[in-house]
Length: 167
Image (cartoon, rainbow, N blue to C red):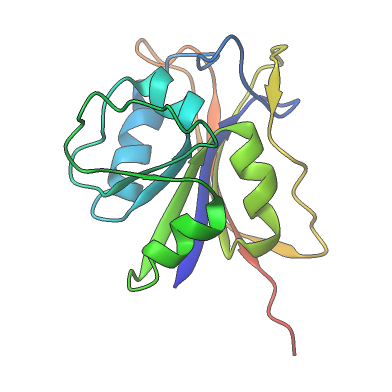
């Protein structure tokens, strides 16, 4: 199974504040949807609550230590108590995506094969940050730059990092 992270960060690696995204970039939302469609998405409880619903066309897995977590009977939602349990439940899948938040990213960075990152060309202070990508462990294998437009307020760059193979 391939474990991938998908994330959008500011130049200073901020990813959120007050359980919300820091920007509205429709192009990035489309990139997220197209990249993750058909694959399971694994997220923390706070990320799930900020989205407010399950994402269609994907198995939705929520990691929470809250024994009283109520998913309001969301269809297509799998609730687990750890990242390890989520990965065991998804072991037959070709690829799974870790979609946040900060704590789940920290727990998964060492076992991740690919990182799909949208680098948003702005510096915004947040209360949640993405861990630094160790370039001794990952290679930048793809990059696509985009300019701001009438729908997307900031310049942004799609990037793909792949874990270096151990020879």
